[in-house]
Image (cartoon, rainbow, N blue to C red; front, side):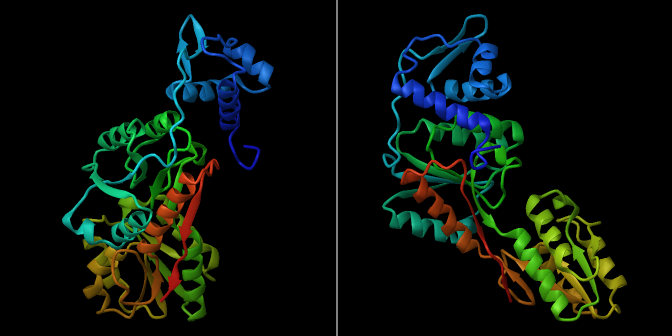
Amino acid sequence: MTAGNVPVYMQTYKQLLKEIRDGVWKTGDRLPADMVFAKKLGINHLTLKKAMIRLAAEGYLTRTRGRGTFVADVLPKAKSLASGKRVAVIYDIVHESSFQSDIFLSIYKEVGEMGLNLELLSANQSRTTQFRQIISLFSDSDSAGCIVWSLMDLRQLEKLAAAKPQGYPLIFINHKPEQDIQGFDFSGYDDFGSGRRMGEYISSLGFKHCIICQAADYRKRITNLQRITGLRSSLKNPPELFCRYGADKQEPLLSFLQERKKQEKTAVVFIADTDYSASLNSLQQTQLTPFVFFTALAPCCRGILLSCKEMGTNAVKILKTRRNGDDSFSISLRAAGKII
């Protein structure tokens, strides 16, 4: 990456888009073959191909195997960033409680203050449904942007990046897509910084040993990995990691805590507050001291509070920035954790 961490394919995309709009390449013009054109531009032909695919997805080019690449006969009209009035919020699944959650209420309030309407959609735990929901928004003249709790895989994200109209506000919330190269906007938690603060806090209280508990289901989740990395970076002694249990199968965790019940000066860190809640009765019968990353539950012991409300507010801040014309490759805002 160069030019402020903007990938070369995006720089090429923007350059070609400007040339098409400025009439350097006129409607119906045939572009040089990819290998020839890439050499002329001084880039790899695969990089050029990626930029071309995006321009074709947006309607500026037509690409046909055996015939070549042409500027479209009719160029798409640039969509006014402020034309739409409806902001879609897409959850992995919507429950009745979703409408009362801090994150939803914060988004609802901020969107309303912008004079826009909010639509809450459920993907019903289907990544295909979610992908199609977002694609349909790209051609919806009343769509003012989308905030999504993503389920999608890397293949779908790549297709989404190619299809997304320039300037369309698409903000991922809580879980960042796997590769920054996608250029998606993100509102989430400062997981690494929060983990580091948690480790410093535990060390300052004089704990000699630390056990980190997280369900095996979520070992590869980036939020968890960042919190654990932050913890490890600031603890005086290497922590013990226990993950031999499932989010819906807590019995191994409860047994483990009972095995360690007489262990003194030991901090037990729960990456998920739901795991702490499920093991509360077992913890009360031990000498272990719990520390929790609180996101869904009201704080009830020591730990770090990560504000869903702030994450929602930040998502709308990004939306507002995009609607005001910011064309940065990507925008990320992270809510800092607070010691409690």
